[in-house]
Amino acid sequence: VPLAAIKNAYNSGKHDVCADWFHFETSGCNIEKSAMDRLVYKYFGEENTIKYQPPILMDGKPSSTYFRLEYGGESPACDQENCRGPHYCSKAVADAGVIWGDFCPYVSTGENAGLYRHPHLALAALELWIANQCMPTTCPSTWLDSPNGQGYGEDPKRATSITWCEMDNDEDPMAQPAVPYEWPTSGKGIFPGHKLLYPHGEMTKPAPGLYVTEYVNDKSCKESKKSGKKSKCRSK
Image (cartoon, rainbow, N blue to C red; front, top):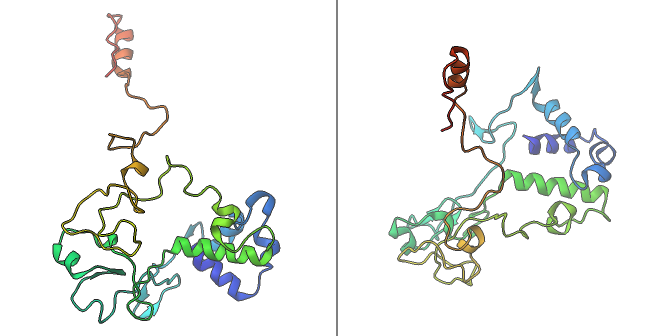
């Protein structure tokens, strides 16, 4: 919805984008939240709520938020029913029947085929592209070089990936999953393994914080005080 709102507003040519949307001192290269909220309400607001259509074709026509998410594999690479959405899997991987298609690479097998587009990434890209037009010296055009991307992926305790399976070549980004299927990966190659997600020997990540592990049966305490009997307060 924010992506559609920003796109509609920018293309309308009715906004002083640089002056109204950005304030580097408080929001860096991001559109100010207040400005984003106003745009969303302008295009999708109705009384005190936001109403919108899903980003799909409706009756064969693009909805108000339409954004094509993926392009399935095309002929001849996918003629053996080996592709999984935008992912190209080898025939051997497809025949195994137990391998998650997302482990297969994105491969363009025709015009636009194999492309997968995440709306939140498109929003980040559009936002930064506009910021770069307004503030070229402080907002680089590439996300990782911009203030928006600083520190991304640098903290191993904040994983941004899933644990991969073993691949037929752990050093090749276009590799196929190994057959027979083996999960998790050893983590020795370029694909993320348990070391990036979990401490050694653990199957979960620690979540630092304060947690209540006991509760007091307050009802029993109050009844005991009223009756004058020996306290029945207890924790479980």
